[in-house]
Image (tube, rainbow over all chains, first blue to last red; front, top):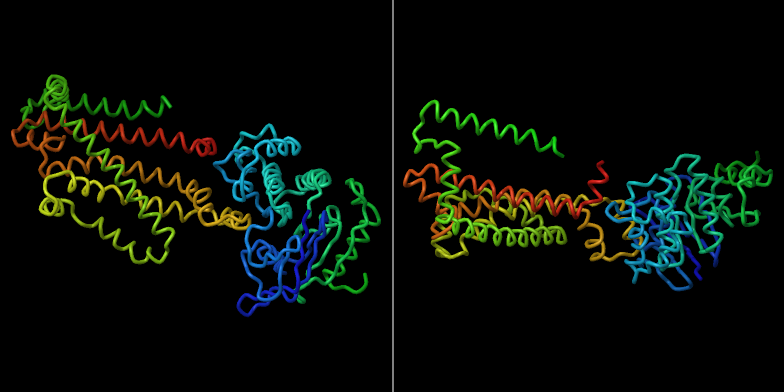
Length: 247
Length: 250
């Protein structure tokens, strides 16, 4: 049970306006992809939800409770796995629980099992491949007691093939658990393939300029990425991002 | 592992043999340079005469070392957690290392008498610095990426320190400990020169003033042995606590 509601949030760093009256909502159990060119303020949005920055104006709500400027209300998965090298995989996934209360080992082991990582529970992060480490980071965020998950371009550092594997893996886990997710990416295909709804952040407007539902049913198969419908969605978003009125 | 040990051992053996042969061939008097066999014989035969000196030094060095760890650590923590204090305190720390111990030692005796206090102060002065500096640097080097994660995950300052910064600084802290461990024995011996009634430092002074050069070398031998033992203990602890790191480098 968790929702996110960002209302009329503005943020300025010095003279530079980063966000201007941004509105953004994520409903219960929804997977929303936030698309935007780099430098459009995607990370700033995350930092404000995470409570690292306080917005100049506006408020942020999780489960209808105001969390503006308050830390620790979301579960977070960064761009890099950010695992602690001296902790085993099991201890790493327990970290988010340790920070916010009591660790539940049984639950962690169960989740590692489901994620296909159980054989590595006593291994150290450096013994795993890049993709595996990202899986561990995702399991850690799933185990976090906060149920709203923010994913910050989690696959951007992976090679194309690993990325595809990871997307499928993420879908399979997500479709079982169905947490509410805000997923930041600059990859249009990834956004369509994974999410229920896509919102596009305008570089000049500093707010959401476009929103569209993703028509594909779940569980999704990789084959949908080759359909006409997928391509049409992609074209539409591409136009909005590049500000082309007709292609 | 065996290979790593062989080459230094071979070198030391070679030097000892050279030493032994040259003292015999050149007929160097014992009070100028005794042969290694003389030294070992003296060490073996008179063990009961100097045994208590060694215990005294071990005790002093150990207490001093633990006091230095505590103080070095506390200073590092203060400087790390209170950056404003760092500006004021850091130059002072460096200055403390520039005071010649030889000059300071008699002063400490005037101020604190012949008890254990001035001796401990000397050891602390010599040993806290490597620990403090290594700890400060280690804490400072914490990966910003991981700090960012901790903040986003809602960790407070204490959690960030205990769960992230401290373990992250551990390799650096161990480097500092290794340096200080060896210094602590030297510090103890120097402090015993001040005026103690037992300790390797006392034994050494007595030996050199009575031209028992062989006993001076016995003292040196035990100082080296003690340093080696301290160093090894820290090394073993390091291996135990930084197991993940050793595996990473393999």
